[in-house]
Image: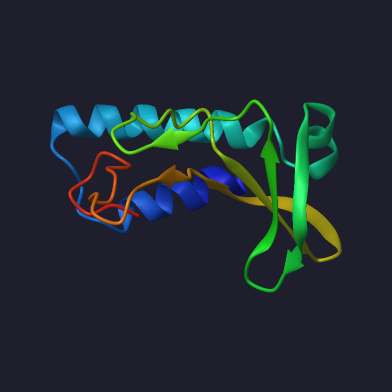
Length: 122
């Protein structure tokens, strides 16, 4: 529920898209929510092959990646149900999922990729 609220809050903080884009945005947020709901705690992520890298850092949490995870490059459509990283942080003594990351490799001369279907991206 926390992740759904955070994702929805982030999307609402920006200009609301037109009706067709709203459907796309809703689909994108729902896909991200499903991905997040599968891994509320690190033990579930580890069970499915996600591995931590680095340690937990203030305001950054601890990132996990998956060897079979997506390798997005410029021009790829982002599948919001397949994040590149899961981010966990300790909150009130318990480690919880706090973010999904979608990493896209781009060359110095390439434009930033499109993300969520809004005029102003997150």
